[in-house]
Image 1 (cartoon, rainbow, N blue to C red):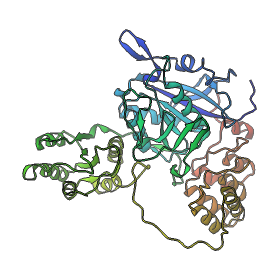
Image 2 (image 1 turned 60 degrees about the vertical axis):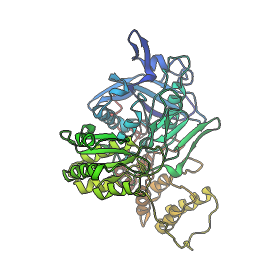
Image 3 (image 1 turned 90 degrees about the horizontal axis):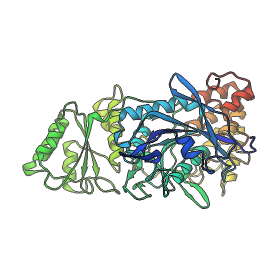
Length: 512
């Protein structure tokens, strides 16, 4: 069936979890055939058009074609066409480990050029851990990766599964949010900011120290673009697969804890790091005659990294009180407002990086790498640029940016992009063209290339397609702008399947 609306392509990756479970004599167990049994019968997931199968890499070197479905047109006049890949072994999320995270990351990398976004179905018990781990192991991500699940199976009479899955699918196929996110109960959160707060409520997750990136209501999806983080490295998407939490432990401080208890954990063979969950703003008992502090100092002297995070859901750890100050003097790292899940996976990630020294690891733990912690910033005062007129609305600002790009006026473009009132990197014109689309067909001589480089270095997306379904790379190739082609490909741009067909280029990615 032909469609008058453009479509985005999304790969749904099924790892297991309650969302796909059915009853058995042993209790709820993961079930196969989720696309056919859980999604195809529901009109919100299937417009009945019976689209062709889509290519999917089930391993880095094994490609197959899987059945696909298409949603009815969304409120954004777009279909989401998708397929579902089920992992060979479906897991209860309590069984997930770093091996499972590597499997997810490898699947994303293999299929990255084939899809506009990704949805990962996962059990809720360890969902915040997986979201945090993936945020660190996926480097220079330029597309949405959204994890979701449900508190009740999609096959149950009363369930949150349909809302969570459909919301994730629409956001992944509509908005170019280049982050690892967690979607639950109408809210899209930064994945490494989340924690599970309820074992039974449909509102099971929270992001205590960071507002939602987007929310869904009856009026549609509202994206908080000012919070969206974009990679500012001009580099292609890559992954790290050797993260291992087996070398990092987590211990919760409690009243009356004995130094021997902490010491026994710190002497676990091959232990390299410890996440210490402390009271309030980072306080822990020092022990009689400083015995607890002595245990900590001895462990740090042996090269073990200890990170202090709060047992409280909101707020920072800080050396406000003497007990917290004693931990700082002993060499404990303050984890700001990191969740336990983010602290554990971040430290595991850093310890797995080749060639990273102890000092570098300590330094990186105290910096925000993927928006996982709130950093203090000093206020900077700047004189307004007299060359740029006062602009009162975003459309006018984007038009001015377009003129600056077309004229190769780097300084004016910088001034417009530096403005605090408008986020011009995600804004588009009436035809859906982003600033990168405009720069792609404009550069040729003078400073035009510098303007495109400036956009890319600020995190402008090379994957956004305009209303005609065209990516910046397609436009660059169509007009023969080799300079732009080179810059875009360096930043990770690639052609979509329709663009490959339009250009008459042969690609083994899409061929049977």
